[in-house]
Length: 259
Ligand SMILES: [Zn+2]
Ligand SMILES: [Zn+2]
Image 1 (cartoon, rainbow, N blue to C red):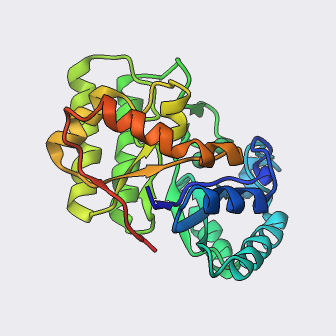
Image 2: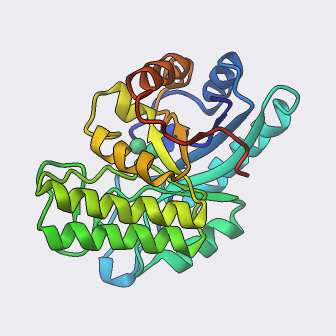
């Protein structure tokens, strides 16, 4: 891969290393594009009662984040192209003003990374990667949100599109996965092959989802989802192992400047 748009920084409270170390790793790995996409700050509504999200940067950290990336962009301009983005959930109740805040703050792209069913502050919300996936109806609602987000045209691509841990009937999984893949094909918004999940042997990217993606012919793109600079250094090897394991599928993998 030459273009990676999925990179975190310690501002999300669960990534390690300095911003500069991620850039140095990307240069060493021969990347042409490094996109920073740390877990976005969110402007939560009044009803969230002062809720604090521990896995994302705070709104007051945005200017430090953008400023740091912009200064690295200038410093490294002859060696690598750097772009400023975020990874963000689509929470209809408070997305619009958060998006406006990000744009005003100098963020130029958003990856959709929908980690939650519901949101973080409403009762009944839950993390979708856990082995407590909720009902079939909830899974379908989650997929509808992804499909609508893809069609909104607001997102550069969908990070880990199969992060939802669904262990219900296989035909439901296939039919819902197809909805995501078809929306991607229709809009040309790529779906990510998440290299962190692959390296960590998480349930995503999973073969069943990849089979549907291959059948649909939707565009797919590698994302390192770096939470440590080493993730970038190891990406080539991780990518090669992935390609070998799934070469039978004929996935449509793109590797190009998206922004
Ligand atoms: Zn993370
Ligand atoms: Zn991520």
